[in-house]
Length: 360
Image 1 (spheres, rainbow, N blue to C red):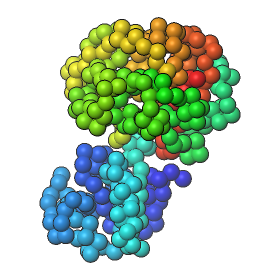
Image 2 (cartoon, one colour):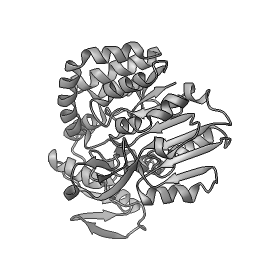
Image 3 (spheres, rainbow, N blue to C red):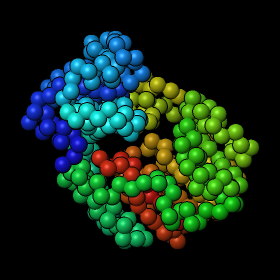
Image 4 (cartoon, helix red, strand yellow):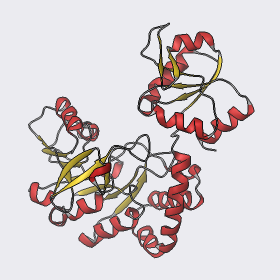
């Protein structure tokens, strides 16, 4: 049973008051979820408020944790600030309120999975031979199991298939770590706010030769620069692609944890970015190349063709943004260098997002 089903069945069995914890931008998705299932939201908790402070937000009463806990000793609490789910869960646990039942889930999953499953079901059936090619190329049994579960989860629209394959240490599994050295040159395409740079620096114990970071969002790259003031890190406020061009981005992602996505026209975009070819920018012996760039991965790999062929860096490439990525990206990588050993890992337990293809 997934977390959404668990909450819906619990609410049907015992109709307790329902509160959201968190009223940031993501909370809108939870309000839409509640409306879709005709669930009454009795209020919203804002952890930054003092004991008796209150305000209205989208017509809902927003109160402090203390205020709600004093008023209600039995309730269903849905964490609606996913970026802070762990700390919120601990705060609630420390309160030791036995009648509070806490839930964490992505409210878009039930809708997205139905849409994604229909698309993937048709694609996977049509490209069975290519999937078999990938399966045969995978270097270990764990990768093969991950692929089987991803296919099964998509075909059956069954989120439970992702539970046992969700891993940790994204981008830095053992087969990557053991090949990193003090001469490591890391290229981070989709550097966000420096989160993967941080993980890399920690993984190599601050001993590396160079980092090249590409991130088109100005706020994100400024955050990374603020945290990492190192002459060995070179920042580029650009996206990466097959050619130098202007792309349109929308921040209306397909899920609450998603980033910006590439759109076709300016009328629905929230920002404009310029992409560059990695081959035209980086002339170094890159040893590890990571890409998580909202569906632009295949184009970016084509723009890094010379680098990949000449350096054969280790690769970590997201293959979940587009249905066809899980077939087309490994096929393209093998066309550049057939000696790559391919590994597949998955990092999100609730749906088919956060699947990464590694090449070593």
